[in-house]
View 1: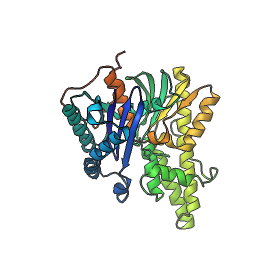
View 2: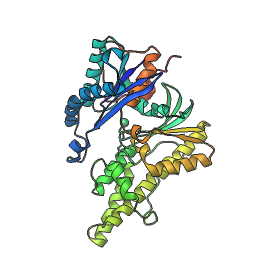
View 3: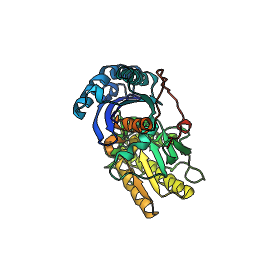
View 4: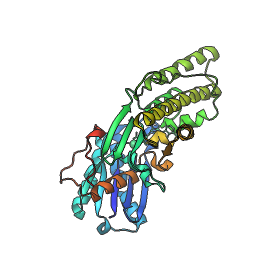
Length: 344
Ligand code: KG4
Ligand code: ZN
């Protein structure tokens, strides 16, 4: 059952074709980074307009790569939320209309369920149940996953998401948007011993996170350096980036270990943009391995937003017989626990 997946929730246009028997047949992502970089962050209206321009050409491209024509597609999945409402509307209107024209079922996919299921596209996929750490630009959540749609939120960020904290701290350090990868690169040359940032909320029980204090910590450290040195040198900024990254990574590791211990589960899935971070992966592998657990990730391309995860999540639900009526309703906010368990 070849399913077309469309992702337009933020600043990446992603399109893919996934088939149960043949696997991933095609995927293409167009990133709007250049459009938003001059503004230092995503401008929602510009994001919507660019999705309007890019989505249909990417669909043609993905179908060509897959060697399929419209009559071969048996279902259409599109991101229905959460995300920027104008951006979501583009993919939803296009996806729903194509499904209607092609007379195939359509399904609106939850963006975070897409991220969560992305590791199942890999060669050695995790079996259920597992704990998932979702770390993206908009969400930081620990989820107990018993099956598709069987989600229990164990903890989440009370303020900034991990990716958001990376992006805001990167901005403080004068790095270009998107900040996360740029900050990770700068941190490579930083001295991990020079500054020590707090590990927020790790000294009390519970699995919630709070990352907004870390950017203030970074700002205050930068100000102190500027007071002493004048303009902060590149090595000094690298030291701040390193201290910040160490703090986020160690905080995530502590909470993941705790989540596995408390849930009695052994498998840990990481997904979302921040799960591409190399230091996070290395530290998590070491810590979870030492505790007798196992870690799973999507390939780096599928950590950040993409169409493959939406095609896959949609395929899972469509093949279980789910589909939606002709009307569609994208949602800027959409709690993941409200999703229906997949019928067997
Ligand atoms: O999942 P994603 O593409 O979009 C959302 O659903 O939000 O995640 C984007 C986030 C951004 O905040 C970006 O800075 C962060 O993931 N990110 C990283 C890295 N790559 C992407 N953060 C830290 N290290 C990275 N290597
Ligand atoms: Zn995402």
